Length: 324
Image (cartoon, rainbow, N blue to C red; front, side, top):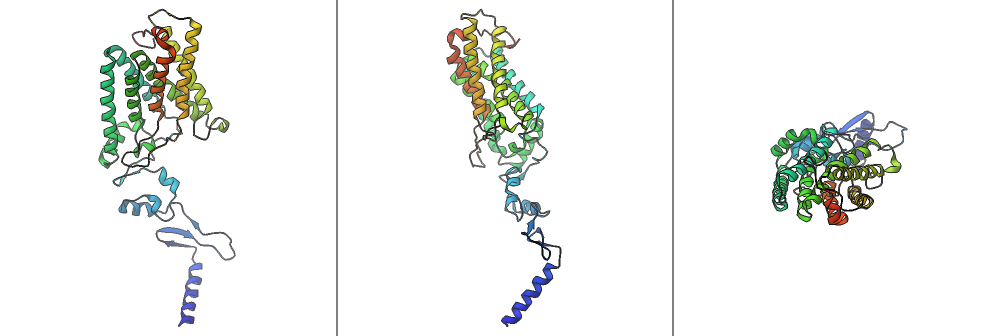
């Protein structure tokens, strides 16, 4: 009986080796020909693997032959929602529409604060309520496929692929503005908001366009070239504000330039220090992360308040439209 079983097993193996390919567990396997050395090759994603994953509502990485890196960049979210993330830009894309939206949002917020809300407390309450609303929508959409798809449809021109399963940058943006307005006075908060609106997208664009210069990109994903441009733009913003200011300087121009450079440096360091991709909590229901959209306005506003000081801030009597 044992001899018969061994013979049957040998004949099965011999017949299998004659076929160029087999499908085992839904994954195509390319068998080795006689005399060929090397291991069995698996396709990174079998044709029917994703279908089975959809049916069982589980990550693609659990299927035979799928790649963990591919799953990490996929659009799977809690509740079986497979949003169309492949059509959205990645972090390494230029994505000009997002950068224009980023600047426009910050500028309009700062302009509204300057023109419509003279009281700091009113603006802080308004932005805190807006931050709470946006965060609530973010949490709900990650649990609801229909709401997630609706948000992606509305904000598709400005979203990135990884944001289909994580908080969008807008959640950190509004939260950062709210905290900056709570911790600093009005003029300092406006400086922080304008630096977020201008320096952050320019740093991102510079980093993307020069990503081939590997010497400039550090291990945490940020670029030294992007850092330089973030500092340059932040400094130009604060100098432009002072240039069109309706108030005469109460300190020397050299001293103001020195302090303005320190404020711009603080904003650039805040943008550069936050890793990309961001550090995120491993919680699908609340994937909170460390984002430069939150850090930059808070750090820049506090730097403007304490580095410029009363004398420096007095030189920032904003014109009607802030920058012109």
